[in-house]
Length: 366
Image (cartoon, rainbow, N blue to C red; front, side):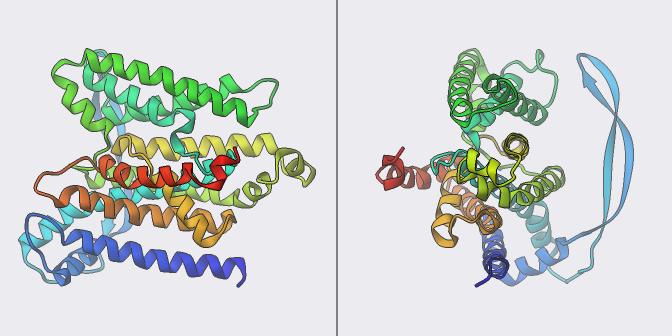
C-alpha cells in the first residue's frame, strides 16, 4: 500500500479509537451517565471558532499591577440536543475539559517522543531526554515552594523553565555551529541530574507546600479547564505540523549525518528545528499536566512495531495513539475510590515495557 494511503488508513483507525476512548471515558465518574447522553453532550460541546477579541486585564508582577492583553475566542455551537441539564454540566464542564487536555498532552508527548527517538536514533529516548521535564519541574516547584519569590503563575514558570533547560542543553552541546548528538545526549543527562538536585533541595524547604509539589511532579490532570485546552491545543497542533513537515528529513537522518548531508539535507539546521519544536511541544504539555513519564517512550515504540520506522506514518499515528493512551490512563487514574496521579498509572504500564526494552536486541546493540 502507498505511504500516503497507509497514513490515512492508520490515522483514520486511530482517530476512531480516540473518539471511542473519549466517549467511554466521559461515562466514568461518581455520577452514572448513559453513553447516549454523553454522546449528545459531547456533540453539544463541539464549538466552531467564530470570532476573536482582546481584552486588557491587570496582572500582578513583582508587586506591581501590569496591564496584559488577553485574547478571547467566541464560538458557534452547531448542535443543541436535548439532555438533562445536570448531565450536560457534568460532562461539558467537568469531564470533557479533563479528557480533552489528556488527549492533547498525550498527542504532544507522543509526537515529541517519536521525533526524539528518531533524532537520537535510539528507541529508549523520550521527550525529557534533554532536560525539558526537569526544567519544567524546577519552574513549577519553585513557584509552589516560594510563591513570593516567583510571582509568575505555575504553568508559565514551568513552560519557561522547560524552554530554558532545553536551550541551555543545546548551547552546552554546540560548538563551532555543530551539535553532535552524543554530546547533546550526555549534556542532557548531566543537566537533568543538576536540575533534579535543585528540585530535591526545594522540596526539602517547601514546608506545607510539599504535598502540592510532589503531586505536580507525579503528573495530574484534575481541575483541568477549557482555557488550558484553548492555549495548549493550538500550540501542540502547530508544533506537530512543523515536525511532520520534517518527517522525510528525519527518515534520511536515520542513515547518519554524513549520508544525510550527501543526500542534500541541511543537517545542522534540521536538527536545530526538530530540537526546538520538540522542546516547545513538550514544554506545553508538561506545563499544564506535570511530569508524565513513559507516554513519549512506549507509544512511539509500539506504533513503530505496527506501522514501521517511516516517520511520515509513525509521527501522526504516534500522536493519535498517544492521545488515546493518556485518556485511557487518566480514566483508570480517576476510576478508583481514591484518585491517583496519572503519572503513576502511565509509569505502572510503562515500567514493564521499559524492562522489556532493556532485554531487547536494540538495547543490547547500544
